[in-house]
Length: 152
Image 1: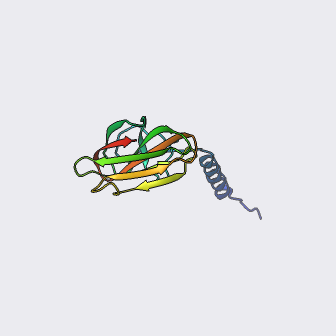
Image 2 (image 1 turned 90 degrees about the vertical axis):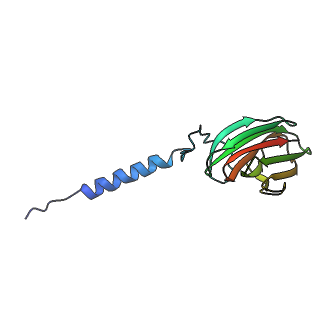
Image 3 (image 1 turned 30 degrees about the vertical axis):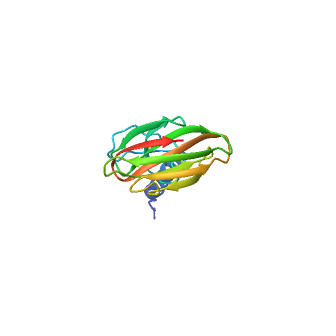
């Protein structure tokens, strides 16, 4: 008596494993849920998982304005700092916007964060920088809209 062997389940299993292995080799990916802005997948996110839609340099002593149109987006503002330098970071709401700020060190670690410490919906961070390098202020919002950022 002859027996038929069905290798189809084995072939499907091998194909699925190959696809999973291929997917695991990707170093990063990102997607944008409705914001429509550019995406910066390798930007420091401080672990929040939001889509980085703005990556700008800001100088100490400068004030800039921006708009966040989605609760799933964040902006990264980068500046150069030196070890022992104390910085004051203000993220002020315009209108009903409710911004939150994180200070991220050159290694990608969140070293300070604030939501409403500046009064009202404004964020305020005062921190002494531990090392020389490029620091990131990451701004996201609980209520969308415009805000200003100042680093002193």
